[in-house]
Length: 110
Image (tube, rainbow, N blue to C red):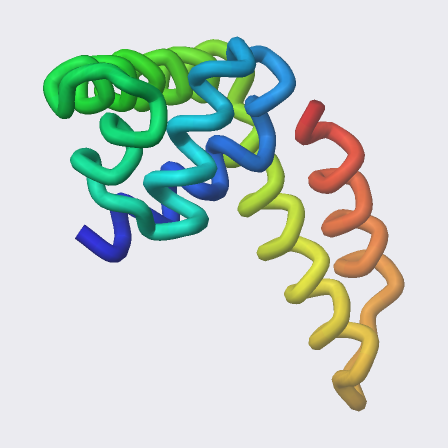
């Protein structure tokens, strides 16, 4: 469950501008502020099921955005490559060719 929450929060960070105001409010309350479905429903005068359905649709939408745009995947790959480059630059056996190869991989992610 924690892994799913971290993943959805990451997707939300990338794709929240593509969501409606209501989707953003519910996601913020549920995933960031740790409100329960019942608390959100009470605050907005809707059923718990309505909140649940909206969150599930929003989660699916975030997954779909990622499947098409790959922003989170590219961010992770870029971070991994930059970490490799950092270690390479700190290594005694520094290789300019290896560094340039990593830089090329980073540039070609997009």
